[in-house]
View 1 (cartoon, rainbow, N blue to C red):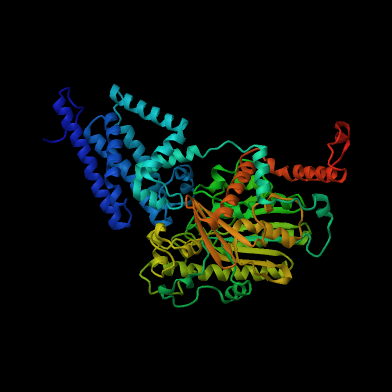
View 2: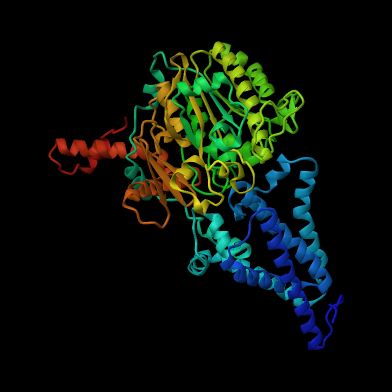
Length: 640
């Protein structure tokens, strides 16, 4: 019997036929879609999850059909909606190694600022067409449709108000690997995964920590208060007032590690290779892979680690904070940021203001004269930055010059002025494309660096890659050389370190490169303050000191520690004695992070409170430990 194309008649047999037909369409779509993405992209739920994933799709399909005007309209709207989610999730899994997460829906607007041409229109269609399909499908005159919609609203509201029990119930039944979100998707399927992680996201919205909790975290970390502002500001030595230049290099990494790629030459400029060797081949440990540059920026500017898959600039930076730009500004520095991308991307307009930049130059402030497709070349960016800061270098006022490059994004396009010069035997076309991108990026960087050092020889210059590049579906370019496994659940310990390690060079003026070793990005601000001789008390030293013997790299659901060459990977939920201290450190840092960036900022006053308390305790010891009288206590001045 063919499916009805009009609203179901009153007779129950016809209604049952329509329901059976609608659910059959869901099953047919599911089988075709999962087979298609498995064949084309290599992504699918695990075999053990197929039945529960199909059941979740059938449940969602039943809710939609309850709202539908006809089987035909339901079928078209369902196929468009389910396909949009499934394809988007498969692409993210293949490119970045993780499934779609609730925060991705908040960040989706940034795609429209990055893409152009058919990619832009395709992204718009991925959002607009499913929405239009739902509106076209909905039976506006039927009570059943409105009741189904009311049930969806009620269920969503209930989960939003009580996310903790929902999360606990789903974790008990479907499992949770915080450190392996791809594994979560594979054992849950997409609908269950999205509901479970949405509930978890809501349950994570903890209230800001109170003063006692912050003080406890400060004590746990052993935070000390160095010399006060006036004392440090009045210091005059050969390190004070030096300019600081921080250059963040988009997707910058060493392609020669791809041993199986068969590269015809070393893509790095020989001068860069020599300079990096002089720096001990130091590496930055980034919080991200393949994207989310803003999280690497946050760490390098604010001195705290990012521990979640969300973009920190988007939802977690809600207070004005004394990050590196504002901290230096209090000592008389002018802080400027340059990035030739759309200004609102990753909420940078607000984020840069909150961390203390005095001025932000975005795409509208640059002459777009040397484009690699939509990306301004590094050569043009550096030239225009030098033209802009030239007067600042001569004026005598110290400068914090922050430059974030744009050239180097996937899929690594080059213009006619930059013909490919490196070939690869790898069948993965992205490998050769990336190698040629690095060829030009490293040479344009060294041209800029030579000019900058000649004009500002005493400056501190920091350069690092924001994250590793994406080299195809499921870590494609890395897997063929054995650097990474195709699935994060199959990573060995060294692979987690490899996944986040990019070149790092710190130049201490005329003293030359600094051998930092493998340094988490959030430790950079502390290192810069040390090189400047800036001993002011600062939150930039709360989470890390540049000379820490043990370095901790938090990642979502896990972290690893480095003590010399000893690597220890600590996954959430695993009991390992070697991880007890670092787990406590991660927890304490999390408290301070919530306090500083979304809370009442008790930690900014904690050093003063703790120092006052220590002074009173010393005085009590000196007089025999007797309590001070109220009048005497009120008259004591403990300010330092």
